[in-house]
Structure formats: structure tokens, C-alpha cells
Image (cartoon, rainbow, N blue to C red; front, side, top):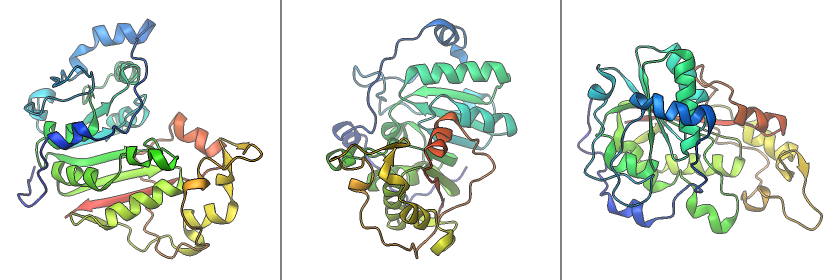
Length: 294
């Protein structure tokens, strides 16, 4: 895999002092998940910690994909793999590709292990780790062929937007780990975050939009959201009287027509997950973006 000396090489420190993009939830495992964590530990990457947090990453640790998988193969990394639906589906379709699931929620990783066992996969590993730290130091430069960020927490409230994952500094560490020509695939079901993603990547010198200028005007999901007013409801339920909508109170200006476009079609490897299905049931639009590392 290629490396790019010109790509940014951030130091590990800044990510530890910035707000994390996730909420810490219970990590207690029960039933089959607890059993899977104990019995399928060969699929779990043991990440050394540099703090007491179970999601921290020792900045001196380097992930060795060849040693971990026992072979050299293209590497796909999913940030925020959830319950493992997307990554295990893709791994089943692409046995000659290695997949690494990064997730902070331990029960989600345990569920991913159950899927690995059910599908009898050998090409998936899971790691409990803060993605910003993992991309800054744990993954070697130029070692990733595809990076996936699907449906990250949108953090709707203005005071919480600093917690969003896809920001300028995250684009820098994404550029660090991706090989030249590697792809960064993103998806969200909230227009405000979709616009932010598009703006961040438009300003990132190491990325180019694979679908620049496509799906504009009436074909743009952004135009369709603005026209439909679907984000005036939250989860399919009307906004309470006297309350601002959770999303549109922070979405920015409704321009009526999206003339920029740049939205990618859904790629074949992205399965419809239970999480995304809820968005469809609520009537929300899905925004896909694909960028190439240059």
C-alpha cells in the first residue's frame, strides 16, 4: 500500500483534549454477547490504552494488518460500525478484502462478533477505540484503501456541533491513513450534517469529490428535503407546539434549489441497516458522498 509523505501527520495530543463525538453508554455485556466477547476474542484487536478510558489509544501503538489477518490484502475501515450489519455484509461479499470495525460501544462490537460467527467470516476484526485517536496514530499512513463513516451522530443542537465527527481535523487524519486513490465514503440522513460534510471535504486539499457536480437541482436529495419539509418532523412525530424542530432549527439557510450537488449514488456494498431503515420510515432522505484521496 502506498504512503504519501505530503499528507498531514498530526500529533496524538490534540485529539485527547477535544470533545469526543460520542456519548459514553453502558458497556455491560449479557447473554450471547457476553459469551461472544469471551469466546471470539481472536477477532478482537487488543488496543493498548493511554488513559483509563476504554476507548483511548496509546499513541505508540501501531496496528499491523498483515500480522492481524495473516495476509496482505486491501483494508477497509468502518468508523462507528454500530451492530456490524454493514461491515459483515461487505466482508461476506468480499472475502479477499480485510475489514476493521472501529466502535466505542462494546455491546455493538459484541453483536458484530456474533455476526462474524454466524457468517463464518475470517476477514473482519473489531476494535474498541476512539476513531480520531485511531486514525491519528494507530493506523499506519497510507494503509487504508477505503474509509467508511455511515450515519455518525448528527449532534443537532448548536452548542453540540463541536462534537460532530466530520470536521476539518478529522479530514486531516482521514487523509493520513488513506492510500493514494483510496476512497472515503460517507452517509447521513440529516441535511445539515450532509452540507457540513460536503463543505469540509470541499475545503480539504487531499480529497476530490468522485461525483462532483452530480445530482443537482430537482435530482438533489437536498432540494427534495427543502421542498418536502420532512425535517419539520422528528422521527416521524410532529414537533411539539412552541418548540423548534430538532434538525431544522440548526440546518442553515433553505436555498430552495441545490445547485452544487456532488451527492453520490448508494454503492452496492452498503446494505440497508436497521438504523437506516428507521430514517426511511420517518421519511428522511439519505445523503451519500464519496471522495478520493489525491
